[in-house]
Image 1 (tube, rainbow, N blue to C red):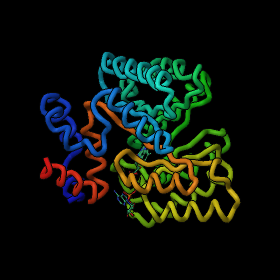
Image 2: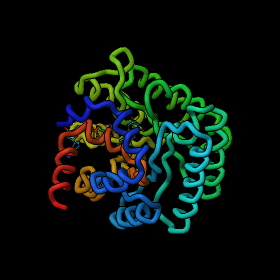
Image 3: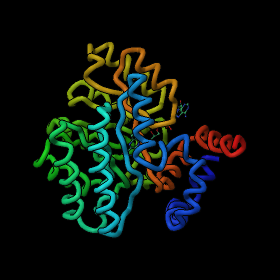
Image 4: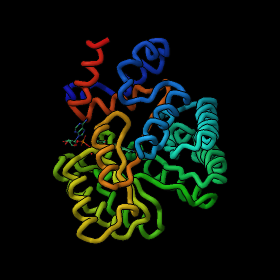
Amino acid sequence: MARVVASLPMASFADVLNRRPGLQRRLFFLARRFVAGETIDTALEAVAALNADGLAASLDFLGEDVHSEAEAAHTTHVYLDMIDRIVAARADCNVSVKCSAIGQAISEDLALANLARIIERARPHDMFVRLDMEGSATVDSTYRLLERARAIYPDVGPVVQAYLRRAEADVERAIEQAWRVRLCKGAYKEPPSVAFQHMAEIREHFLVSARALLERGTYPAIATHDERIITAVKAYAGEHNIANGSFEFQMLYGIRPERQRELRREGHRVRIYVPFGTHWAGYFYRRMAERRENVFFVVRSIFSR
Ligand SMILES: Cc1cc2nc3c(=O)[nH]c(=O)nc-3n(C[C@H](O)[C@H](O)[C@H](O)COP(=O)(O)OP(=O)(O)OC[C@H]3O[C@@H](n4cnc5c(N)ncnc54)[C@H](O)[C@@H]3O)c2cc1C
């Protein structure tokens, strides 16, 4: 089933829903397990519940591939409000931003202007700002934005997608520059010339980067639900006396919630990526395409309504 979903063209799935907000709203129940509501209020309730269980969070306002300045400005405003609300709620939470949602496809200067407003708002609160990584065509541009943003406020960090053939070189650069990296497998469909295609190979490369970051990186985040990687990272940290407090595990909202809490009870730092908003189609599509279990949850939610 996950393969069937993956074979559907993502652009048309997301476009159809994004063009029909009424339909998207009616279908929100499908995404509820993976998306913490459509508003900042519901998202902050989810963050409070996670914080109560000792889990930190990173909030993401859903939306990507924005092609209008007005929409990019709107997303920026939502982030400014989000930062104020996180601070007011004293939540253990930072923000994750997709550059394509704040104007990257229109111009890098526009995206930087919007990003600068976000980081200026985060700066007085020492709030970390994560730049999510998207399709491979945007990676160089996102690094350029990262470097320009860090000249304003250094508490901004990238995501490295381990499936990319360039990932290990990017990790080395990040270590050299003391960038705080989130390491994940990578969620976008990429050709073999750009990205490893087989899970065994992706895991192997993930672990090469994870070890480098654990040994020499700046508070890296190991973002995965993959038990084999989690076990290997824990073992490596134990064998090399890498303290639990010097890295964190990250997982997605609604995926393996029991394991999230178990890792916390084991003494690890754990942060949950919490997406919210009405434009959930692209994010939801990627979750459906990557795991059969995720499709089952959705099918079950249809029948249990
Ligand atoms: C915090 C966070 C942030 C991310 N940010 C980005 C980003 O900026 N850019 C990007 O491209 N991608 C991002 N991703 C997505 C990531 O790239 C992967 O697509 C996604 O995490 C799936 O890979 P995985 O390693 O978690 O597990 P998978 O490869 O999906 O699964 C591997 C194994 O994990 C276990 N597992 C997975 N899901 C379940 C489940 N529901 N129940 C039980 N066991 C399960 C199973 O043992 C399974 O065999 C992010 C992921 C996380 C966790």
